[in-house]
Length: 335
Image 1: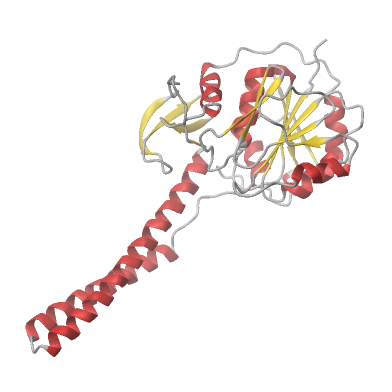
Image 2 (image 1 turned 90 degrees about the vertical axis):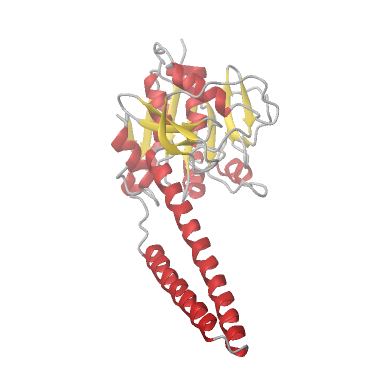
């Protein structure tokens, strides 16, 4: 009998403490392998495996590429690498960013769905925006089980709320009861897996690519939209099913609608900042040229440079006002 022996967990803001509390609850005889993605800075070394190793009876480690998985262990994604599952082993890949992150929760969840089907339990904990929601949908699409932290119990409720809003979540639990729930679910029969949608297989292959040595193209699923990728400028494909819309470019950068809107806001703010800085440099130049023209007794040139300065000053005021009123996209379960 196959059981639900693959537990994948995703967390973002507030996730370190939430993961410590959850992993402390796992029993020593947990008949499942646990895989964790916590959003991390790409620079430096993560001490999360050591933190989780100390809190409970299950050993926690950072896996190496190709390592065989074992039940009764916790595997923690390393900085700047997607953690992906294959039949019996793990991959660490520097594939394209998904929702501005690497490692990405969706990449882990999707790979688990493709490799293990109904044996997978997906868990979304505290965090901002909605990474993990599309991954939970993929897990449910193949017959797996979804578990979400109660938003009222989460330090940052956006990720749980978005997951609940967009997916038919099987279980909503407070953190202190989640360990017992996962232990019980892991002993249940998995049941039959459903066919894996082709789009998920293609996106899993994209996440696993090493683009420095790519020698075989993987076709991006979906249809070309009229939007460009804010990461690389390429065309974004829109991938749409009955329950979700997501975007992926030809390079492979992936976004949920909320993740895309957030990235667009960041790029717009950056562009406005560059424009303000450029106009201020122009004002310095125009002041210098006005002074030079005045010193040389050229009144018409002096007036032209003064007019140019005033126009640049007006542009700066408009741009700064736009930056002040630039609104971030909704994050609290409004995706």
